[in-house]
Image (tube, rainbow, N blue to C red; front, side, top):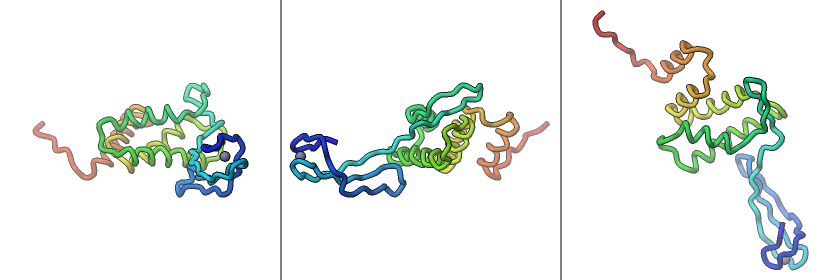
Length: 158
Ligand SMILES: [Zn+2]
């Protein structure tokens, strides 16, 4: 980390503190040459996590892909940038908690859905249907009905 004042390349970390969600670290640093103190906010990135797709292909985890999928599901839905960021964070936290090097795309999808369900139910349904995580149409309908609550569809005539 370069000193912003004298551009010396060596700094000492005086203090580091993880954010409440555990996904970023704030570090207080001191330049070893001029003694200037400054702080950095480092976002943690998930590394070395391999996603096993349903056809067996493997690819490394990508936050960009997660964001792309979430944005698609949340298109035109009322969600603030801050809530969106938090959503990405909680999903990644859950991925990290698993402490695995490999995880199936199905597991990722389940984690995403768990959090989307809380954040936005329309987005949840969109994601779930795109994701095809339901074994069949019946299961999907069941889930949909659960979300729609007790509203009953009244059939007219015969
Ligand atoms: Zn310096």
